[in-house]
Image 1 (cartoon, rainbow, N blue to C red):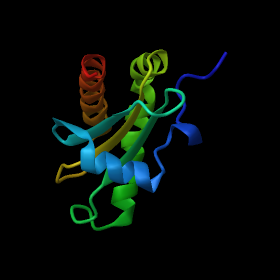
Image 2 (cartoon, one colour):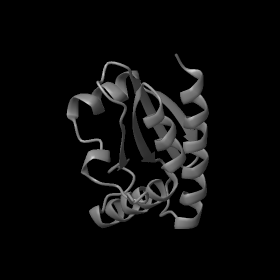
Image 3 (tube, one colour):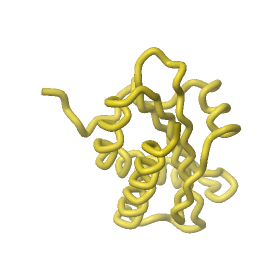
Image 4 (cartoon, rainbow, N blue to C red):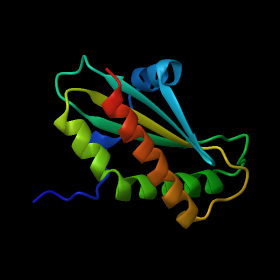
Length: 131
């Protein structure tokens, strides 16, 4: 029985080309204080769901703060990704996601958890609508 609450190497968005194309042509969902950018791929041989997280260094100068926020974002995504993952792997398209924190102050985990859930639900709704 596979573990469902994981965020392994194959699920991380690490390819520089895919990240650049995601930021150039991806669609955006704003759920303050999060910005979720997503892009569908049809040319890949099998459906995959890959995600990345980020924080602007201009807003949070200290790496300790940025790393803490990214840890919170990854945890919120990891615990709520399963419905989206099931839909993507059951379909014919691959999906790349990037979650950015755009707030000005240090986040509280509970707030980020609910906002990330909203953003992922909106992404799942749009995933079914797009050709």
